[in-house]
Length: 500
Image 1 (cartoon, rainbow, N blue to C red):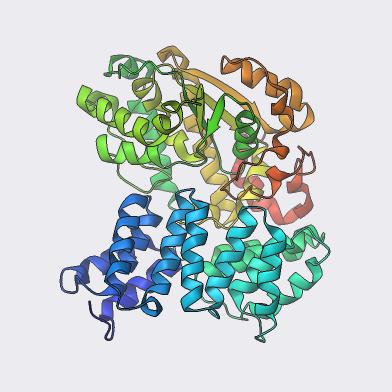
Image 2: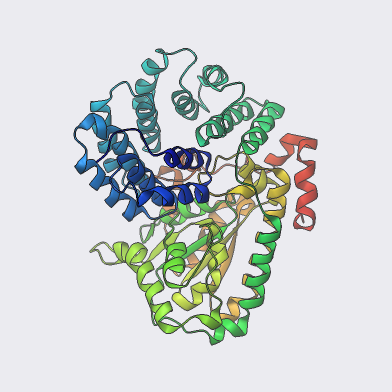
């Protein structure tokens, strides 16, 4: 393996990756992989890109191979960090912490590793350990390290240390921040701190500032054209005429909707039931569509072949792959469960496949006030290809396209025999018992009172709602959009008739 200067195109690929421009990063890497097949940095970045695009098993294998070929642990510590992040995406928190600890043993003062471990401890709700790790590290530099300050701010967004967290982040964020994911994440986190402190104008400025740093731009025409194609191709007759899987399992439960529409809360309520397991936001359906059904595009809008082009082997292969990755691990054990939830919101692009792959599956469409949904998206740091979430006007346009395609699925899928219902966020938070009972009944299971106490579950929530779902169900996020007043006029205008 080569440890000399990196190839020139590697720097271009790395800059694109850090900025979130995954297509440019892959194109740059493709130019140098053949000529530098053993370069540690090239192989590691390629594996990181695989992970970002959902190919986690491939990424893990490559990173393990690179580590095995490193001359010493000091060379390997950065690669172990990336492997830890892959394990985190694989929902393997213990393995992730093991790799971070191995990396820290070789580089105990590496601030990025300390911040990464603190984030993992917070995910595991080990808050005191995270705080004890961060405080001495933050005292060592001035201005504070950006990653450490961001982790500390996430930890203390709702504690008595919030003012201290604000001061740290304000000093850590450069006056002219680079267009990197780390900078955007820090600015989003500062906005969240301002919002918790009722400084709504400052918060909104942070959210729009972070979005403006993204190098990827939303294409409204392409998104509208995609919805047109889906509506025209996936008619009730076309779905009825397409080949179907012989799979008879009623285990799959797909929870879909706009991001930040209550999908995590819905999943948490359901998986509090002893007969329901959850896999969180799985890319398995998108991957199955890409590998077996010819889908192209990013994970948030991968488009399968229209039903007229699907063949029985296509359907069989996609079904088998999804079962292998999502269903079988939970239904083939002695303590097997009756239902398995997959709450990737963006599966709404692919709902036409569900009655073909799993004729007895259940679909829950999560709905929330579009203004609150979009504000929550604007305030969120999304990892990966989500250009629609950077500007209020783009969010409004994207929401309308989501609403169009979901209105179509809600018309045609019941005709195709699909089991589909809505979960309205505002109804859940105002009358949790009634709505929870209705959803459990929809899934065909007996009621269990544990569903009324989702915050008491010791499950780890792996998404952006990790902190919220550990609290009892609350109503304070309903009407959040009103905090920002006239600043939301571009969003309100773009949402148009989506607002009831």
